[in-house]
Length: 255
Image (cartoon, rainbow, N blue to C red):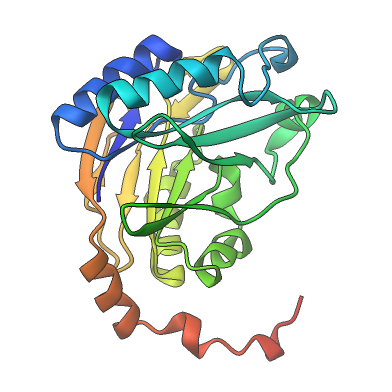
């Protein structure tokens, strides 16, 4: 599956539409955008921007996906049925139909914990073109337990829209590739770049492979649309060579 990662300073449907158009032209079947890509991250009071899961933002993205024939993973502040606000990622298929919704389960820092309610469901998965896709958001991937839960549930490609800030570049450069190897899956990591409000985003979006390679990597300063392949054959071969999941001894490290 050819995957496009949109590393960007901008937000909103217009930015997403342009990225989807370019991704489709470059043969991508899936476009992943950063955390809260419909609104931006530095919202002050995210509740003012929150909308229901099937609100106008979702309708706009569905039209974009169907128009360009490319699946889209994006983020937005969701207002839940009970009025709580969640940091949410949605995956839409190339026909515009919703494939999965995921609410961020590990909130980062005082800003997020003050404004969002954490999700309670993990792992969240969907099937697309013969692969099992999973969703996490930013800080979630820094917890090995969250990624391992996806691996044990059969996730092949883990989609991680993110808003990683400086000075934590090592998460993107070291930890994300390590997660791909230790849990034997692809990790697609799409970050923001540049300053937004008080936040300085680190860029360094990447597709990390289970064999320890990084087929695509952006720098820390520029906007970019990365395109790279998640190869099922490489995934199968790597899992055969590195049987971490089969060799686990969970009786020695119970919860």
